Image (cartoon, rainbow, N blue to C red):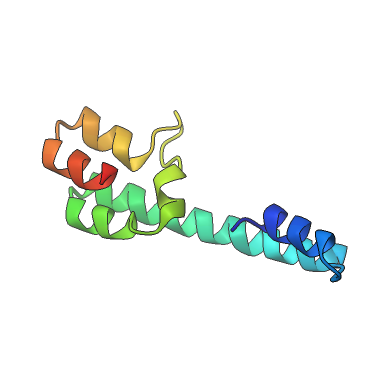
Length: 91
C-alpha cells in the first residue's frame, strides 16, 4: 500500500494522519522503491535473473522502472531474450 493510499484510508476513518506522518511515510516509500530499483538493476545487469525473479515476488517490484528510459525488469528480460525468466515474471 502506498503512502498516499494509507493516508487517504486514515482520513476516511476516524483517524487523522498528521502531514508530517504522511510525509515520513512517503519518504520511506521512496527509499524502499529506490532500493528495489537499484537491486533489480544491478541483478539484471549481472545476469542474476533468479535473484530478479525472487525480488519480483514483491508486487511493488513489478512496477519499478529500473532504467532511465522507464524499463522494468520484465522489459529487460524480454529485450535480453530470456523467455523462461519472462514466464516466471508474469506468473
